[in-house]
Length: 245
Ligand code: F6R
Image 1 (cartoon, rainbow, N blue to C red):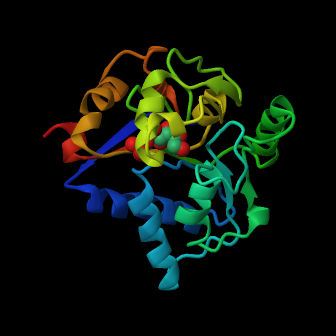
Image 2: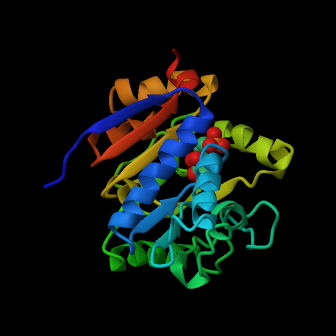
């Protein structure tokens, strides 16, 4: 049986958040070396990924049997585009952990048949026996991956239009809003909410209001992340700035 608890852990700062997140991920991989893990891009998990890479360099971590799933992708970009989220994932976590390409399930935003690519992704999740851990960041509008509000908790992996808020927030990655593609692919909420574990990392005072709505507010389509309140084994790891102490 699954436990339904949101475990909220508040730590002092971003460094502590990165260490605690790495502990959680490393513990999972130790217990289940062939774990299936979804990895967010974005800025928040970068410290966690750096910490894991350090541990691997010190010989404390072996991820060679784990399988990693891309969380989301901009539509129309190949893997060599500077804005490719696969490229981001490769640079920030896959290469530093020396993950072989065969152990990665991409979400290809440049596939000729996007619907077929999304169905293939969901089939790969099923074939892996589901997701053991989804490592997620929290969008300024409460999005998980690119599941934008209003969100359907049963939604499959699919293509969708980004909201203005996500375009504006992604603009900082690429040097302006005109650089941000308007459509994206995302692992569906149905995939994320079915994960056997979730780690939501949240840092910074600008996430304060949306974090409170995520964990304390009603479960509503306008705050996609609020659906985590009904999911299994969710750890919300936030620094004090994000929690608002
Ligand atoms: C990234 C992603 C997004 C981000 C979210 C928070 O793959 O899916 O949902 O996790 O927008 O981004 P940061 O961490 O940059 O604040």
